[in-house]
Amino acid sequence: MRQWNSWGDSATSMAIAPTAQEFLQQLLGVATPLPDATLEEVKARVPASRLPSNPMIHTDAETRIRHARGQSLPDWLAMRSGEFGVFPDGVAFPTSSAEVAELLALARKENWTVIPYGGGTSVVGHINPLEDARPILTLSLARLNHLIRMDHSAQLATIGAGVCGPELEALLKPHGYTLGHFPQSFELSTLGGWIASRSSGQQSLQYGRIEQLFAGGKIETLNGTLDIPTMPASSAGPDIRELIMGSEGRFGVITEAIVRVSRLPEREEFRVYFLPDFASAEAAVREIAQQKLPVSMLRVSNAEETRTQLILAGHKLAIAGLEKMLRWRGAADGKCMLTVGFTGSQGKVRYAITEINRVLKQYDAVATGRTLGNRWQANRFRAPYLREALWKLGYAVDTLETAVDWPRVTSYTRDVELALRTALTAEAEPVLAFSHLSHLYAQGSSIYTTYVFRVGKDYAETLARWHRLKASASKEILKHGGTISHQHGVGRDHAAYLPAEKGEQGMAVLRALAQHFDPDGRLNPGKLLLD
Ligand SMILES: Cc1cc2nc3c(=O)[nH]c(=O)nc-3n(C[C@H](O)[C@H](O)[C@H](O)COP(=O)(O)OP(=O)(O)OC[C@H]3O[C@@H](n4cnc5c(N)ncnc54)[C@H](O)[C@@H]3O)c2cc1C
Image (cartoon, rainbow, N blue to C red; front, side, top):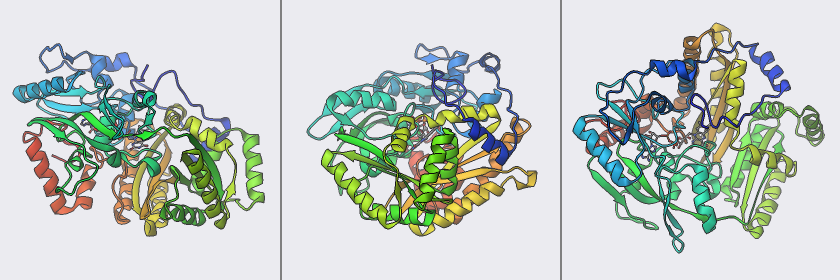
């Protein structure tokens, strides 16, 4: 069963190896975990619903709690402390576009606000209800999860937008297809959420971001239905799909999405290499991206992330053996781990492996064979469960990401980590920060940074620490000309930074669109644009 106050399924967990615990204690100090509120305690705090009784709307406390928060660190702190703040007044689970339209019409007539809800995996406060005098209806798309049409000749699948990652792949597999969209949140996040927040999957190098996969579909708006037809390409003015991608539930509810699917690959494998330092690792992956070599994934951990990953892996003896072999072959302190995905026909994969080995040899990379790659593949969607294990030890973990052009990759990575490591210096709290490059382009790269710190003496102090950390990192993103988000979107947490990226004219266009679709600020108010 899905956890009500943390990530994922209650039957799955990840343990922290004793060596990793020692490492954290040495680096950050021994921590004292904060007490968790129970579901029963939180249920008792849910206020009466302001929505009238309606067979389509659930107003029981537990359903409202389970749809009140996403997965950002502030969300996590709210759920664990039981201090949720605002709850939705009710949750509806429509089963068709017509029911979504009916609920939107009701919201308009009765003066409710509506929050479209996919998998609730947002890490930037997208789906959190905010204080509002109007009743708040959260609209879960979970029951819109069917394959509606499969067009084999155009390789287009029409699917209900509430389908989550595993359901979607299970629908496509019997037809011989994959969408190839694998965000780390794959287990719970949904097709509609990916589109509405411009998501990127781990193998975007081969399959593209959601922008390349979303071909058209049906959007129920407060003004009626918006149908976006599919075309392979068009020069007929601005693309309406672009208005919907990244609209974060502000312009309408995506009920059906038509996506470009690919044939299931004949062969897929992941291999791990080590490079002597970050400069050579960065130069190597830039070369691979700019040569457009046919790999499905490149992921380079910097030296700090490599060191941390190897410690977290546990298996002390095996890792010591690996370290010895790497040192002997020239990848010692400062080494960087590179994971490469090879996906496609037998011939394509063979060619890609030969070419990658050729390029990497020029940068003194050490190949380690398949074991570490297999391990990465087996655990690729399990890493989020580590947050729970860390939490129980008294450590909070969060991530942030951006994308910059190649000339700024090294300086940004250095500066953001320094900003995080020193953000809590005034209270003498060390912070562990490390990064990887995971979505690579000929022009530049995304940079994904993880940071770990001790929880404070109470929830308020922990949240205050997070605010300081987030503000220092966001300042570095702006200073280096990065986007405030490469893949997580804007939501509430990034909304104040959006004008710096879009400019005055850009913001005016976005506001005009919101005014067109939703003049009363009824759909997901306060997200994307600060109302
Ligand atoms: C552990 C973890 C790992 C993650 N890894 C990745 C990653 O690798 N790549 C990545 O891109 N993101 C990642 N994310 C972020 C998150 O999963 C994405 O933002 C995802 O796209 C959100 O999808 P969702 O279905 O959960 O949407 P929700 O969180 O439910 O909603 C997100 C936004 O989309 C809107 N929305 C949802 N469905 C619809 C719809 N049908 N119509 C209109 N609006 C809608 C909501 O109103 C909200 O504004 C991760 C998050 C977590 C917690």
